Length: 360
Image (cartoon, rainbow, N blue to C red):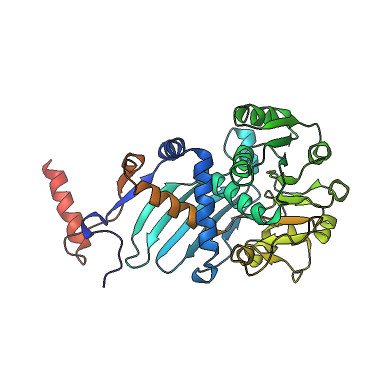
């Protein structure tokens, strides 16, 4: 019985979601609804954790930044993301992070979706943060501090609003212009927003603290004296070797939760700890095999570095949306796969095309 997902006649045409398509998809669905949908796909995929190939991302580091591939498969679909991280780009008027992704069917090996993922990564990162916080933050959490008000900040705020009901924000960035930008972008989104002049001021009174800074260095964005009992820390910015945000003393006080320990120990804030330091895995409490927050006064910390299954979930979500009525205009077909009449005669296909081109 065939397991391929498409008919033979369209196997060579790959749906492509451009940046423009992705923006139109977000506006058609609604950004909060879309992040809620991606979050649901992430939870569904993490709940079948054992179905996936799992590997730490493949990284090529330079003194300018990092370029990475993030692959995974559940046996039916295979997905990967190409992504870079170049903090120096911001000073040159370029994005710190750019990305694209591919989803393929395992049965044929043919791609079934090719998509921009610069925007989609921002959505899935925020959705993953909110999924973790749903299990780890106190139920009555309503105020979030965001330290680092760059490209990811608004997405984090909206995901936490959609999934947890966050309605108060305390913003801080070393660049006041970034904070002003974030406040302006979120001004009509239902938040009470306070702009702060230091990280310490931002975290004062916050139930949840999100750190999402870009510098590729061992930084101390949060010091131990800033952290009070009962807070949840969403540490997003420490995501490669030599790049951290959280004081080691905070890690020793907190219950730590991660996506995939072999990757997080290399890239996350826990690279500051011994290699065998105990941590908890996200999938275990999504699947109710372990409890997330166990006490109101507990300090919880999600050491988020991003994992390939989250990209797989986001690509799967986008592909499913494109299959719904009225959504076919949000992608275009790429003639990406050679399709000779006789599978073994690729050369003959090339030659026939040459003959047509010469005649024309």
